[in-house]
Length: 280
Image (cartoon, rainbow, N blue to C red; front, side, top):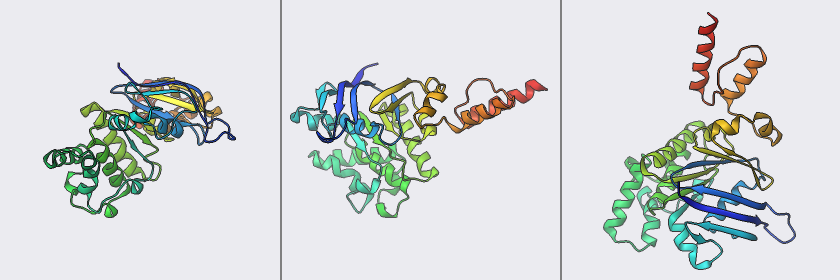
């Protein structure tokens, strides 16, 4: 797997007077991977995300994105053509009064031919299942739909990687589900690398890799199954495990042992069904 982003001994402070938010961070991200970054508020995960595409510059150490040093000002535009950012509030990223015009904003600023812009906008809206809304007014859409439009705007720029900083924090369960399904589609069907910063455990379950940050450092790094098997360690950092696994642990305390460690509702149902059948 090709390495696309490298954090090399990175520290970051918002001012000389403040304590470092990130401390000697070493962390790599890989092409075609869906990586979820977890951590409580103040863990440094959002700061890390903004360092990836040069929104912030390290206080010390180096961030290399697609072979380019983010601290070099001339690399800013090439880096952002490879890496798109989506933030928590989609309203802050929507700039036009019609959906398709909003998605076209980025490609237009690249000075692309009109036909190419049209093609990119249509492809991006279809990728996020929002093509039928292309003539709608964004302010009339649901939160989940707005966030998918924001993602479409990034796709239309032909970025290879999307970094999302808590994009579902302001959404209801339906909107959250829409966004995560969109990200999985982008990764699986389009080969786009996804880096998702979140505090929702059920979203992390669907990633290829989970990175847990605490006090500006990486504390856990592995597959969802590997990371969530460290329940006591997560609890010490103020984090929980996914609800199905938490329920399985509670049942285990009462003598009901479900094989494996169910991370999804379907896995829990299958495990509980097997338990009941084996008892019989």
